[in-house]
Image 1 (cartoon, helix red, strand yellow):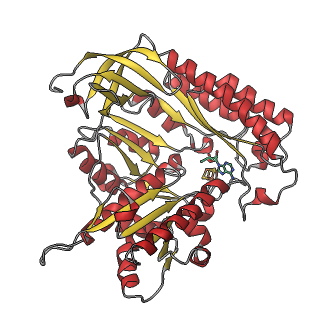
Image 2 (image 1 turned 90 degrees about the vertical axis):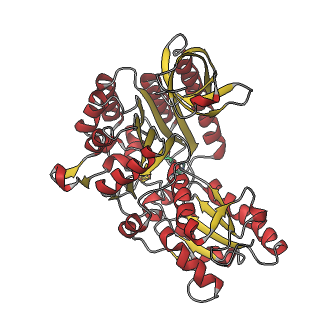
Image 3 (image 1 turned 180 degrees about the vertical axis):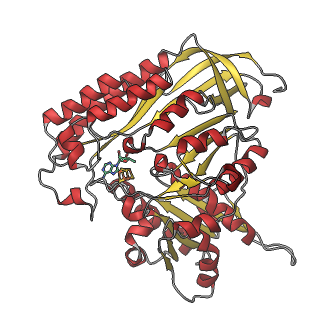
Length: 458
Ligand code: 5AD
Ligand code: SF4
């Protein structure tokens, strides 16, 4: 692509994102870091000068997808006469390092999740064919400090990273190895980023972290400078003009402290939705997973959260077929699900990850049994999700309008409980919070009628 002599020539950037919301956020930041170098997003990898594959390592399937994508990109790179640069970012990059380049030599750059700010320098080096193609050092502080403090909003809802990494070492999980030690971002920087988003029309922020409720960061000096918890951070961010909704994900039961639970009761901006993964309902399996809590303690936390914020929607993650999981252990998970009643949940078959303690354990469960348990669990979770959605029919809910719906004249948005909502209304509502009456519900969404538009919205 070409440009005039005094401005940087435009170059096409295509980012493919796999995995969790943290990767979605990181991809946005990669885009921000590359913009000053003249990179602008394009719609297809074929027309890109730089393709970044932001990868996920959490389960085997996720990793395999990356290699098949890289195979396709290699063919595109050849067709481009070698013009295309291929960068692999994220957790597969961190875990596999040089092995990635060995397995797929078309890859030009490999950078772990703590190295995005070094991407411009790496691209410069690659274009001159000098130096290292690999950057997988852990330095979360440096990453947090080096990334631009303000950013372009992309709609009325945005992610804000507040914490990274994990020290929990659940025995099945690669995250502590790929994302490094637990680390919180400075409150000042979080506030700057949130203010910048709010000034661009963002109404809802989701605070992100692998262990987001382990957040503990020094407060701004004028607030006393003491270490704040996530609850204190949420209360503070709720005061920023324009920010009407706050969410956070993903949390761990061990860090669900009293102050955060209280914040659910005393901070209306904190949305009535809690994603608190439990993984299993069996104490024996929870112990083998090194989760650091029992099923009873989890039940107790949920009861206290529900007391603080009646009607709050509860979400979770589950793993079936962890090594040694018996029928009785699985039944304990089913019973926990029946007892709690989930608004939504994500469930997975255990996937053995090289280097994790669980991979070395005895009693690996057969694929057939894992399949059967997953189907049984998902049938119950689908039923609960459908019931939770149906329970909204007849209610009036405030919906954050996030864009046009599929049909003409239709808009979509999200409820306080994170449900997708469709309703007929004018496009001018985009980015506003409007009241709707829920008239229909299915497994994945609600339909509604527009009731009343807040003053100044139209
Ligand atoms: N196998 C299956 N599921 C896993 N998860 C994490 N590691 C594994 C694994 N090895 C799931 C957990 C976690 C979610 C992000 O992914 O449920 O909460
Ligand atoms: Fe993985 Fe456990 Fe840390 Fe979550 S808490 S990221 S499951 S090690």
